[in-house]
Length: 217
Ligand SMILES: Cc1cc2nc3c(=O)[nH]c(=O)nc-3n(C[C@H](O)[C@H](O)[C@H](O)COP(=O)(O)O)c2cc1C
Image 1: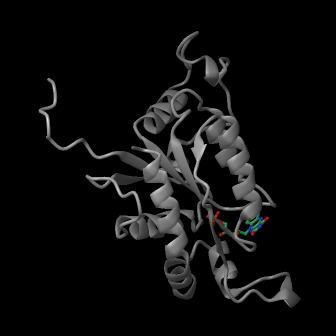
Image 2 (image 1 turned 30 degrees about the horizontal axis):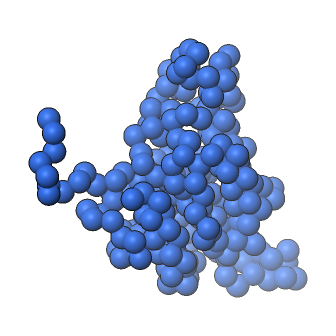
């Protein structure tokens, strides 16, 4: 059926991807915080109707270490994935017009489980816009840089503004440990950290979200 002239367009769909797969992670809480800030914002270039944001949890797909015989770049022109987990993950990512990646930093880089999940994908998301949010002792910048390089290489459109959250009250005498980091090890995003990231992170989050929406027009 053709859409009547002047009728509203369908809202764009944006996935907020939870990168960390640890059982007692904070990644799910950070992604929820980011989603809530973005939903309450009116950035420059805001689309009408407002996009619909959905959390997408890599951990829920239980992806094994990449085990497809076919290269994802050859799907579907030259063949299909053999495994159900690959089909489900790729189909989920394919539902969205854009992405907000929320990544932890493990051992000075992108968590291996996040990279593994990305390695299952190609045609389902190339060309689409993506913004990157990272968190860690140094704001997760090494992970953010790794992720940007990978997504640029896969021909996604990474927005210029990248958001990074640093655990407050780091003690240089103790390897930059902090109460927030210690709590995060056990999966708790304590209030002072959540409040800091919500208030101090808001302007940059909204700026990046505006850049993301500008690429969706
Ligand atoms: C295996 C592992 C390695 C880590 N390496 C780093 C690191 O290199 N840089 C950093 O800032 N934090 C590092 N951390 C601390 C994380 O920032 C912190 O645990 C955070 O909660 C991880 O996010 P998640 O809970 O969502 O997995 C590491 C944590 C784990 C579990």
